[in-house]
Image (cartoon, rainbow, N blue to C red; front, side, top):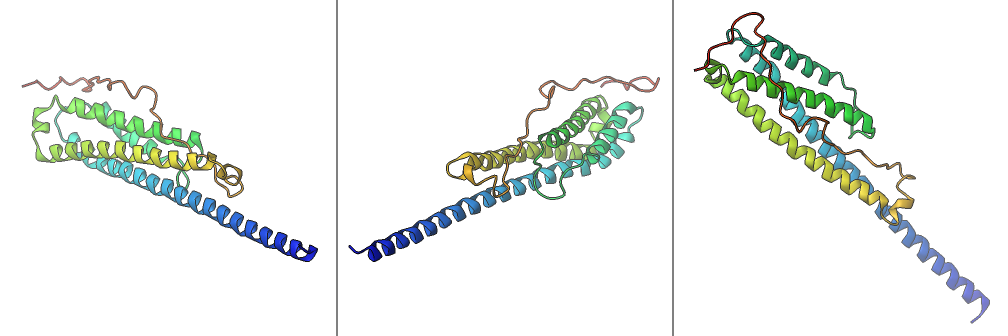
Length: 212
């Protein structure tokens, strides 16, 4: 075989390798982008269900506030917890990339969830309140929303797991950083979330309502 043919064959082989490499890198890039979009979509659903809970709070507070002698500090706690959720600063678009920011968001949401749990527990001592259709409807919506929150958080963690795992696999591990892909944090249990809410009654000097 002449030198010219050998060089031609080498050039052809090089072209094939370049094409294969380009296709491989393109596949890695497209997969990471798809998984990244998956985490963003899952995060949007998490925010959606949390927002649904926040939207229910004003109606719940207004409904409960109408009960005679209702424990006032519980209402104040719920209102303050809802306000603290709104003060957490997160990226305008896409899932959080900063673990500290996600932890801050989760902590604020956990405080609101705990405050709502205490409010509902206190409300059990008001038969006239719990018997109303408006309160029962809000209670059912909140319980359904809490279940949705748990589901969407789980789906978000699944999406993050797939995305983070893909970045660490060969050969993506060599290109993920180059393409701007970094590991994203998971939702984790907030300290103390496994304990039932503490219920303390404060009627502002007024007597507690009699139990049936």
